[in-house]
Length: 199
Length: 132
Figure 1 (tube, rainbow over the protein chains, first blue to last red):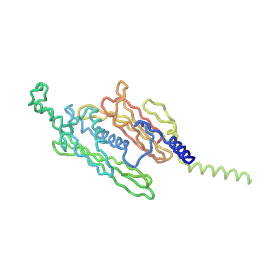
Figure 2: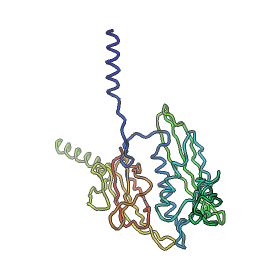
Figure 3: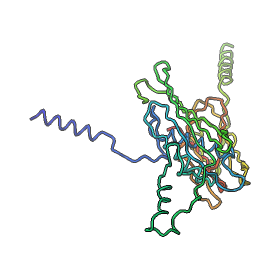
């Protein structure tokens, strides 16, 4: 009985000492650096890419119209299971906000990103729908630009530490000519204790 | 005689030590609306220049671009972030809200740059803080 009481008291004390769950403000995050890729790395890579892209002027259409971009394949060549949309979505949002580029969801490397583009057009055959509200033929816009890329990870041993290198490589292709009109690589290098896991 | 020699030696050693010490940049800090440097950061570096220009775009518009340089008098880690504003003083969001980490070596002058996320950006505030 006495043993049980001591155990309960100890576990309660330990639980009381643990840090409580809390929200993190990304604009003022003082948290420790992780060896894996976290949101700060994606933010940094996307910010670097967008700044370079805007500065290059390749996404500014001389006609004043917005360019239409399609997202092609972004390969995850790391040891981590990540969704590359964590990078791509930030770039898409920033380009849309810049007023220079709009992304099409009607075309994609594995089919349309939003299948509703075609599903909405299948309503043409239905008598249940007011046909004046159904999308007309020939209204979808073909993309001008294609964004593709790769995220690479390399691990090294440096004395009694490990070094993990992440490379965010992106290309923007002008689909009319097939030229890569903009390319960028953002390296993010981390060094930390050997016992940290980077996959 | 012995005493005066001792004094001269002490002065000479003190002079030699002072000569070997790294030359520290001026710590003068001028308050500006577009630059905010935390007091902890001012102790180990100085912002040498803060420049701005507009990058012309093929469509006729232009984007605000800034460049700043810092000189450190000791190895130091810092973080920096730029907040962009439009003509009305409203914040224009960019990709990230976070700070960019940077490592500056003693005596090194490093240059950093950033470009506005939208053509309507007309002003900015650069914030330098200690690495947390």
